[in-house]
Image (cartoon, rainbow over the protein chains, first blue to last red):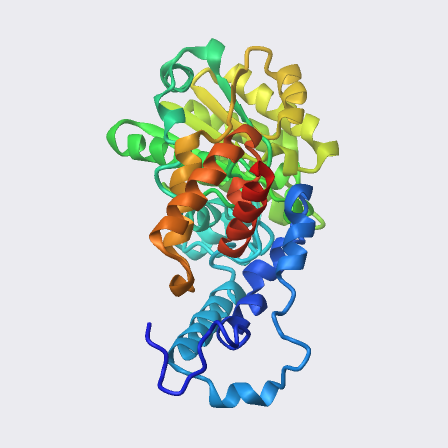
Length: 175
Length: 219
């Protein structure tokens, strides 16, 4: 990306280009995750201090908006739009998706009434949103283990398979 | 773990296209604990088992009976479990997948597991796939003595491909060059594979920060 002519170089005024970054809900909310490991929390908090020097005057940014900055803003607004409608929980870990805001289209009025009566939860829609944000290629080894295959094919004595893992092994962000 | 669950569910669903199996999934969530009662969970399983086809008569009858009762719903757990057993009996093979059991309201967990155990015991064509933090293993094993437990921890390749994916999405690519990129991946993978927890929480700035910390650490 080339900077527009007359644009001050980033190294001299590092606060001009990436200012939008600390506004991003993804990163701002990262600290507030309930099981965020203590190992990073203090470090990150320091890291996300707005990178303004004390002498910074906000009006200066008016003259320094370039294409990169505009794109960044657009990316940010797009991000905000999608999180608002809850189609993905990418921005806030696992806390944005409400189970009852998703609706599944059912065959008929009676069909949908009965389905809603059975349960307000819509796990199929929830599954769609999880799989859309899944990171492919990770965790596939499980499907190849003999334990998994025996469970899938096996008899009644091996009816239950439990995968145990701590937060951070991919429960929310590994996808 | 959520990645793992969704992967397993999808692989089962792929299989469902080839052979006659039915898959029901549930995702537990801290914030949805109020909505996630035992009856709503069991109802959601039943919904997925019967939802594709026509409404079975027993379900329609139960619904109409419920509508006539004072107070509207009248959906009891015992009725649900009975209907679930009937539904499962009419299917060849049923997979029930429940993600993040540790996020289900702990005081209700025993009853959920008991209900599941009740179903599994009477319906040998049921397979149950559960995920959660290790501390729920005890509760699970109380109700399913022969549970097979697989510990999930990311291996080096997982961490590496995750970091690469994240770095590809860098929104400020000018600040990165190939050497730095390779170095970040190497240092984080080397040091973090021992720690297991953490690598998947890293955003790019924190990745660079962690990289700096880890480098300083080794000098």
